[in-house]
Figure (tube, rainbow, N blue to C red):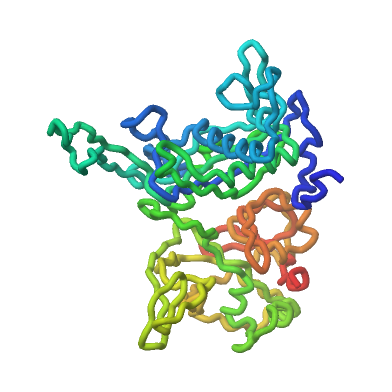
Length: 488
């Protein structure tokens, strides 16, 4: 049985993974998108003590084109650590081979074995004895935030045995005073490690090296703690975007309409602002659910009848210039007179420990701010009377939102066919008619429950052709209905 058969998630990508090592390039790439987060003060420099951090002046983002200074982790500073981490495992299990002179494979000794997985993956060179090219390709990793936001300086000194800066024998003052520039904890760097023509075992080995490595940079015995998170894997027949380009796009997304990035950034995934159309259907009182319900979701019972009435509502899409954020602090409280905050829990008895809960007890929450605007379409095929409320409540806190309705003018009583129509509003993937799916040319996807939402779609098929009050042509896909049968 092959290794890949035991990793079902990789079966669909077997065309991009080799069954065995090939000495000639075959053009099969696996790009590992890694988020690196410092968990202590960290120093990245190329020279010795006293040198500053490595920095580069680059364009901030794709949309925000002002130049900024970013901290850089050089390519070798990353893979050198991960390579040593992997070699520790190989040494522990006696998997490092001997070279032709009988010496155990070791780095920087001109004695590579040329046989172990480390030599074959990360490469080696022997003076006059050939070389193995590395199949792990890297580039400089950039901090998401600018230098001014993610770095500080600290003065340090070296004292004598008497705890002072004066020599206890001569009384002379020490000159061992210096200053280090360091990266602050909870600073995020984005990195892509590209593997070329690897087997599934080699892929596992590199991923394990990345996830097991925990200290980077200078003075790593006392600082440099870092956590690596594998965000995605891309299988392709070519290299993908660069570290810098990915950092710039992420910077734009995180910055939004704010003047500067939040710091520190949250590790939690934060989706794009959107309003699911199933939630909108409830909020608009097109259907109702019981107050007390402990069973599974009732989408089929509640939304199914709307299909029979010819009623449908699309997801709510926020316009780029209609989005505002607000940051607020929160903390949970108990009913008791006595309480104390333990580790992610609230204790109500003085001498009794409580178990941690799986939801936060205090912290900061980022919310949509006042004045944020989103739009959606309500389709009424049968023209039945529908109450259009002026206000609804949305979200976790049942926040109030004002609705402004505009009736669109239908240009034709029958849908019109379009070859490829770009859409600037969200669609629910489960609600699209089957005939449209083959004509979905391009899209971005948000994997949210209960069904994925698609944005920036280019699709062909039948559309309702409408005109807004401002005279703008609007094309809405025909045949959409709540796909409650597909998500059951």
